[in-house]
Length: 446
Image (cartoon, rainbow, N blue to C red; front, side, top):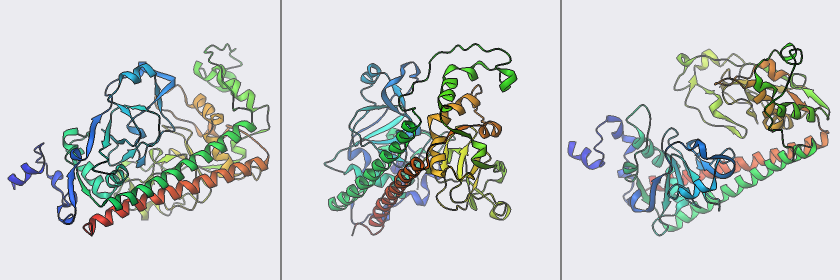
């Protein structure tokens, strides 16, 4: 009814998508109170909107952007830094402990809770501060990431090609107020998941530091010099490259340093297999999952909403096996992740499949080196000079990998495997927290 549509939201939405049945769960909450988000929070505001490139700095205050918003916890391993003076000017976009963050545009359906003590800043991110007299922030983050919260966030962001969250509408998001004891249970589960995630990151950093210490790069600072003089014989005739960026001194210094150790070319360590690029016409809504660079990080694979016809693509022998290393060569180049078990999926042509064939190298060690500055600078040198980065397989084959004693590789491998086990346990606990919330809502808070 028109009268019902008018009462549903102050924004007077009439698009049919807004009234899908999955968005309406009024019949589920007969035994508990439901509050609008604005009534249980002391702040719902958006961070700085606009350009701030001139305030970027190498060492400063971390700036979270929409790309850093993930399910439950922020991805803060790759952040831009802004000057402290500019940070102090942006009072309303400062992020504090236990603030809840939602991407205002682009990455919908995910909410993060910030659990570090230092105050940082945000760009184009909605900042929500729970009023802890009314709601537990850990329960709120679990609810927002549950299917009841996600469906409402997607609902408020629908209605246009370029999704965008309207703050006024977001304030109307309905939150079931479950018992204090239940909310505290969720808090304990989320905090335990965060603790395991932090332990996982600590172990991974220890593996990185062990690598850098072993090859003498822990305190290595590459040259900032932009000028390098080369003869035609020393440049183009040897490399086939004439772009000046390729010959920056920092790249030469890194290679010279690595080559003081025993090294091996990547092609002599791994066999390299290419995947396919089926084209968007082949995309389906069900079938065999199709993984692209955007689904890849050094810590794992995220879910995809793109699938391929299993009958057509499932028998091509392209599914990655246990210990296969996926390496990105297009877009965000040089991201490597080692598959922990055989997977029933297809990767895009932008991801190479590497299989270690040299017994002097462990897969976990090779993966760590591929993600380190050692290879990152080689990738930057090779793939630089274009708007959309492309790292040629012929260049990847010639990547220099330092060879360290097997005992060090085994230590690195043990640290990484323990790190990933803790990360997996953290993810399991977060799924459990969401499912606990969903079950409690479905049974009506009884």
